[in-house]
Image 1 (cartoon, rainbow, N blue to C red):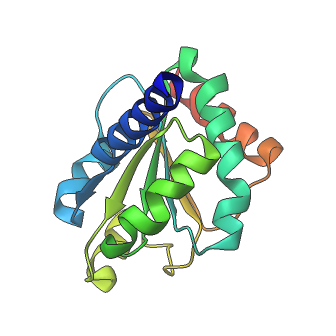
Image 2: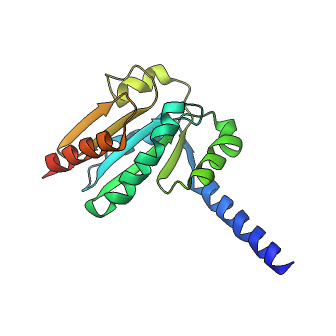
Length: 161
């Protein structure tokens, strides 16, 4: 009984931590994160749980986050799921896939106004990835393989020097 109770408490604690770590914000709150002036290379991926190509490339984004953490790379995952799906889709997805990257749920229905602020090249299709640092900025409206993502992150890192 004690083991079962302990297991339940650990599970609830992990779920509660994941829930508190997913911030819901509008684009005005997110926008400064797209222009950070720091020593990091940012990989910002726009995705959704209902987007099969997004789900397919998620392990690659997580791998890049792990492999390049020591080189100043930070991965930010911006979910475009509906806010009412946070508890039913987004948090279970994060838990099931063991995501360690920061996740934000973007709750801003005025996509036609904020999509061009992310990139004038973005049609609005998912997945979409912005990679930038102080000397590099690139936008990709595509699904990456691990090798492709590794190459574009390495390019951004070499441009940062």
